[in-house]
Amino acid sequence: MYSHSTKIRVRYGETDQMGYMYYGNYAQYYEVGRVEMLRSLGMSYSSMEAEGIMMPVLELKCKYIKPALYDQEITVKTIIKELPGIRIYFEYELYNEKEELINLGSTTLVFVDMKKNKPTTPPVNFMDKLSVFFN
Image (tube, helix red, strand yellow):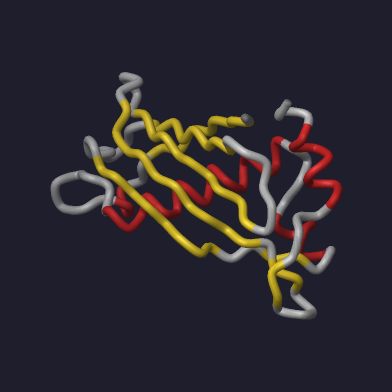
């Protein structure tokens, strides 16, 4: 298993009139979590795309437990529980400043060969960096 945490402060423009973060913004926080997790492994979407691999989202799940509020610093914990094949599964746990769990989510992405526009296996260098966290 590999997990990585990053912090994001809820901005005013991401909230509704009550100061609650708009429900559609949670998917963007998941993406920040994924991007920062990849960066922690020395990878990026742009480096994969330069190798001819893109990673579109196939599925998104989101469970709201408590609201994220304006100006709160939210911790996004991103988790990979199993080595990817053609698909990669990410789980997310969002915590407020009191370390209360406020949201659970998951996304399924697929590795796609950009030239063939077909699913493919993950890049070897990505698997090399990730596999050390799995026994």
